[in-house]
Length: 283
Ligand SMILES: [Zn+2]
Ligand SMILES: [Zn+2]
Image (cartoon, rainbow, N blue to C red; front, side, top):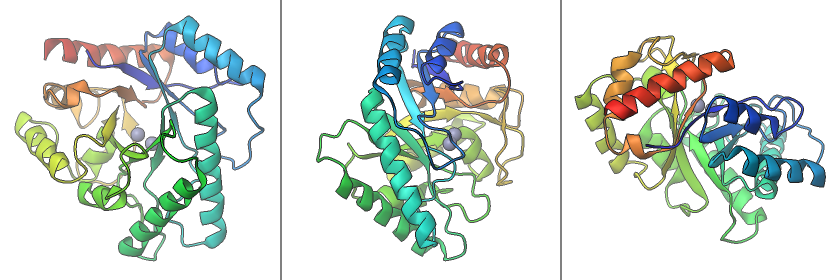
């Protein structure tokens, strides 16, 4: 059984996400290490770090991953936003390090009109900028670049482009997180065993399975290829239960840690996780 869990809110205290994870039976939890829609954050106090470490032991959560703030755009053509994005992500990586969080997920950036080729180049320059400022390997935090739905000028909506972004970079530094909703609305059919088999081959030929570290399992409110990113409850959207059954019957997908990012309450998270668990058990 893979590690299964959810993105959970950090109300006031980062450790509160761990208690929520325990309530709904998560092995893995994804959380924000700073407020996601502002640049500034007060430094992590020793007390906050200690509370987090203690809560982690108490709750028995096996894996914690962080999701970067939404303002970060590593491909921005605006020098001020680009620098702010880089600094903000560097700070988030340092916070992950202090909290003992091994993965930080960040979206492939948006080129905002300068074109995909230059956007990818800028994205790669940003990754090098970060690595130049981090202690040399082994630095214990790996960035996971997440594929996008291809809304607007977002990069990383094809696996080929994801591969271009990460190509040649050390695997200890940069991995990939794939989101099922984003894949689907970007045009990847995943609702049949045959299409999942094709997708698995494409992953092998592009980003490589060894870089693929985390699966975001979200159903989609909008149809295949629509490029509209709206996460929905597992089995209740356009991917549907048959789609998730096809995906999770594939041995390689079924091995990855899985995080849901569906809307709603803890009760709804519990139901979504239960649906995935049943599919995994039946596979
Ligand atoms: Zn994301
Ligand atoms: Zn996601």
